[in-house]
Structures are given as C-alpha cells and as structure tokens.
Length: 349
Image (cartoon, rainbow, N blue to C red; front, side, top):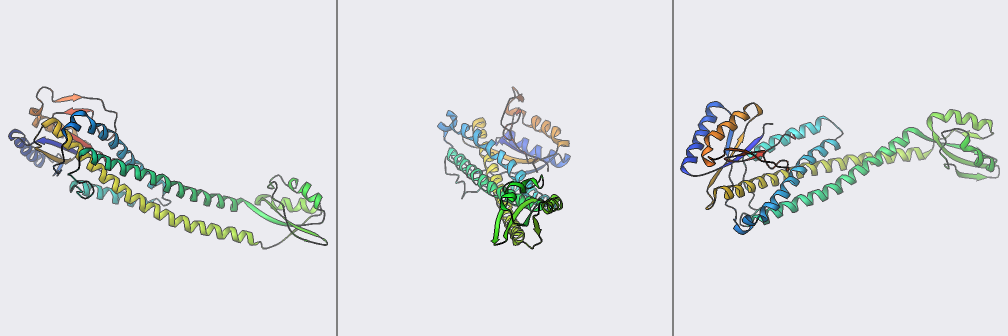
C-alpha cells in the first residue's frame, strides 16, 4: 500500500493559487491522488499552546498509539493457526484503512470539537491505555489455554500407563523405577488389593513399554492387559480444550480486529489534531488553512516533494528545507518543509 501525506497550507491568495497549480500538476503528471481532508474548527487555547502543555501531551500519546497499531496486527498474525485466513483479514484491513483515510470525517460524538485540545488528547490516551490493559489480559488467557492444550497433547503422545499385578509390595516399591530408565519416578499407585496381592499402576514412556514388560516378567511381576478409562478421559479433556481454544481463538481474533480499527481511527484523529495545532502555530489566528491528503508511491515521491517545495516556497522563503532530528516514529519527518506535512505510514500491512 502506498503511503499518505497529510499537508496543510494557509488560505491566502498566493497559496490558493499554488494549490490550484498543484491540482493541475497532479492531474497532468499523475504524481499522486489527492483528497480534501476536513478538520473541524477545534477549540484553540492559546495559553496551553504557547506554554507547550498540549505539545507535551501530543508528543507522548501519538507514538504510543502508533506502537499499538503496529503490535495488534502482528499479534493477530501470530495467534492465527491458519496462514490464509490472517492474510485475507489483513487485505480487508488495508482496503478499509484506505477508505477511512480518504473519506475521513471527524467523529464529533467520540471527540467533541468543543472540548479543549488537551482534553481530546487525554481521551485518546485513556483509550490506548484501556486497549493495552485489556490486550494483556486477553492475550495472557489465550496463550495460557494454548500452552495447556499443547502440554496435554505432548503428554498423551509420549506417556502411557500400565497395570501390574504385584505379590511382594516392598520389592515392587524398591525396584519398579529401575525396570526401565524411562519410568516416571513416583508414578506407582495401588489401585486394588485382595488376599493374593494388589494391582498397581505405573507411568512410563511408550517407547520402553516392551522393555518394561520383559523386565517386570523377570522379576515375577505380571503386566495385565487392560482398557484403561484414564486414557479416554485424557482424550476427552484434549477434545474439550481443543473446542475451547477454537472458541477463544475466534473471540480473540474478533477483539483484535475491532480494536485495531479503533486504534487506527484514534491515530488518524490525532494526526488531524497535529495538523490543526501546527497550522495555528505556523499560520496564526484566525484559523484559516486547507488540509489535503496526498497518496503517492516511492517512484514519484521525490518528484512530488520537489513540486510541493517549489509551489509553496513563499511560505518560508528564507529556508525552504531544513533538517531536524526526531526520535518519535510515525510522528515527525526528518525534513522540515515550508508547508506542513504529516506522513501517514501504513506500511506495516
């Protein structure tokens, strides 16, 4: 999937003319696709912006959201036992991500524009924290169930239980573990007793069953052939665990899909907030700017960037391109340009 650039320019006469030139250049050269990106008039709190309070919240929350947007589909893939199904789901994600971004509409019910910007960022932060907490709980429960099932499968595949008729109890207790190297220590249990002796169970690896029977016969212990219900009970438990795992798997996958979508929506809203704040800081008040969403690919990205720099050079004539450091993935660009540009990187899919 090609990545998106969310750009913002002021709506003065010169810039408006440049925007029209950009649209004509895009149509002529097919450098990218473009859409108008609508951001509502958010509540501007000059003290918060000037004092850096909002910026500190914004720069902390956005990387956390991006981190979880990357983690959720990765865990989604890891928890899937079938290869084709997650691939189809990720294609579904990609299509819906593109549709959502290109037809973006601010969710006024979830993120009321009348709230202060700091409150909107706090809402998103709490949303991410809630997803993180629930994810850890659900993932722990699912992988614990999976581990229990694998443990039972491993045990049923390698171990077996035999019944042995014993007349001399003391000799049996002292010697049964030495009848084979792969007898489970302490596994002998007395199941039945009468006047002539008792019947003991013993657990060992299946591959030494014949060796154990031969050594037991040499020591005057008789291994009795039987149909033991314990094996059937273990198989029933495995079947129950398998059904439960399948049910929990489907619940977990549905939860991952829903919360991936919710986190992505929150992330795009946070990008929109970032564009709004940056536009106020750069272009001043009253708020008067235009946001555009551009979609390009690596082949045309350099030429598109050159075109944008040329058209909007007048916004910062002293230095149209500066290099700044940024340690926050998914947030900053290394290149500071005369126009505002926020990348929307969807390459994790």
